[in-house]
Image 1 (cartoon, rainbow, N blue to C red):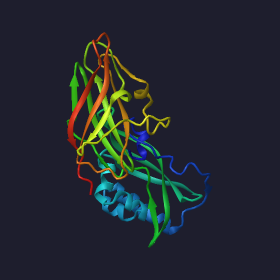
Image 2: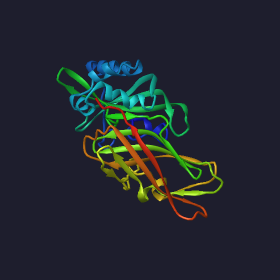
Image 3: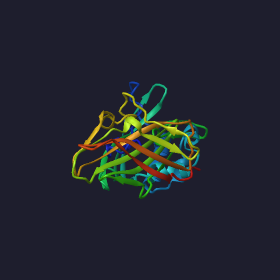
Image 4: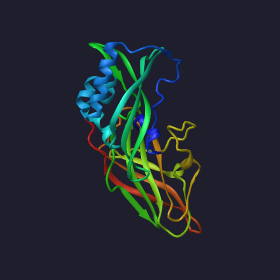
Length: 276
């Protein structure tokens, strides 16, 4: 998920409070630091992701591997920065200079199926690079895709895959469960849910105490009344650089009020794009 996203909807991941673990000390950006930050933000604002990618630090560039991968972390959420303002900076041990930027953004809210807007303070690292200051913009997925029409419905319950985000060693799947039936149902996706890749391997959701990795509502069991819906996230541990061409998911068990037996919702294999 993208850094701004926890503030956008339940479909987004972590990161606006990056660098918060270490106590900061106030420090002004130097002229070269401010210049590279403004160039980076201008590139994002004008959706020139190749230019923004060129300003990232070497470790960040290795993480994304290409400007095309980097761009997907914005395009999957239709995220656009309308305007920004640098409002502060500080130094953090082992993290360099941290710039605080006030942003007004537009994005597609996967939970509401509509475009939303948000004002948020986002932190960027400005670190030494081979040719001067470079940008550290962490916590994005290195590749992301928002597939269209990937859903399955059974007995009035529909599961729709909204977004798939690839991080190092994990994949996050944003999914909407909706009840179009006449009776309540309970969704227990931490029971028998399985993610399958095109190599025949399977993965189960990570169950942790970390809110960025485990959706508490889905973990405890989601009770859906008739006409209700819920959008949440399931995270699966994978190999470090996970690059499947297709994925399939079975969400289970689903328990209908008064139903004879639990059932599952299996999404047929779908394309997750070609990481570059």
